[in-house]
Image (cartoon, rainbow, N blue to C red):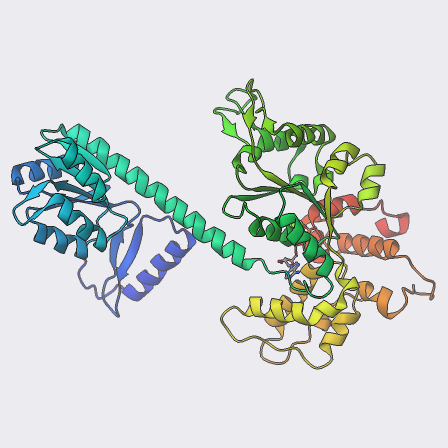
Length: 498
Ligand SMILES: Nc1ncnc2c1ncn2[C@@H]1O[C@H](COP(=O)(O)OP(=O)(O)OP(=O)(O)O)[C@@H](O)[C@H]1O
Ligand SMILES: [Mg+2]
């Protein structure tokens, strides 16, 4: 117990601990209570401390077990009657119960379901001095996890308790995963599916109902990743993993090991064996973003995996069967990528069975009001949604949106941050150069028409100059990915490089 201390502000201490705890949820403690001027009660984090209850009228047996099993990560309670056991089960959240077959006021199998009422996740180990088939069956039917006969070695009990705890941990991991999957699935909403995205949404539903590989194309920020998620969560594989990897973000030397996995000693640093993403996506979907950035040799190997449905890890001899659904995406011009031999034709034909093209935002301005409303609601969270000033929707509709939906979202976010309080004017944050093609017929300083490519090149060169050549920052400002920027990076003209 911590005593009251005149010089310590416990509220401050509590806040500091809460901040620490928020920053690292895995810190091994939790705040139980705190009040003005009183020291907070800090308890061991329940993930680490498990609770065991031994229910036996043979107090010699239960005390011996308590002394043997009590440790840093296990608190042991004892009870000699059913009544006492039920009280403890209600008051403490018991993880494992060691339950005697015969108690003075109840039988083990009768008590079992009542204990499970207090905590359905508890694991119960029956212990009996009268081992026989009927007793074992009664225990299992009553919901027992394990069955031991007396006299039993303490070590045998410890192993059984460990098995219970491992199972509890696995169950928790599984329920956390199911919860996360549910949240992610809920987060997938394609705005515009009855508007400018109708055809893409129709194909997305078609893709979800099949298991064929899919290729999603479209400019950066149009929603390819969201479409990939919609396919996965709408498919029969929704309960499996959705694993996404950006092929442009990995150096050539790493991506093979990442996808195929490796065996111990396959290369320097491979101290153990590891399964790759193909194997990890078992029963789920693998999303390979920016497929055109994948090294050509790996594209051939990917095609083999799709045909043969087996993988051989780097440095491995045996083949592992794989069962995943491939969704690939690219923001590059597919014909150009094929022409420049960055994308293998045979892989392309395999992927192109089902192709979904996500149109750029400038081709579907009618979706803008619904999208703006959707993004504003997302940005606001639980606080009140901001409203747009008059005429703003028209201004947003007239803009060229080179960064597509990502840019729209960024502009709205910026407006919410800077113009908080009044009606929002996100159009103040639009880039004039990107507006040019729609509002001024793409005129240059002397009125001559400039191509979109030229405007894009100028925007890139200007942004790179402003950020001092910082690729990551420039990509962020331009609303495109780093690899897209790298690909689009032009050689500066002598005038621009000055
Ligand atoms: N139809 C849509 N409805 C609602 N939100 C969308 C829609 N399309 C895209 N978004 C949102 O817009 C942003 C950009 O979309 P996304 O990341 O899917 O684009 P992308 O095409 O994969 O871009 P990149 O080529 O850079 O990978 C995300 O925040 C996404 O949730
Ligand atoms: Mg993406």
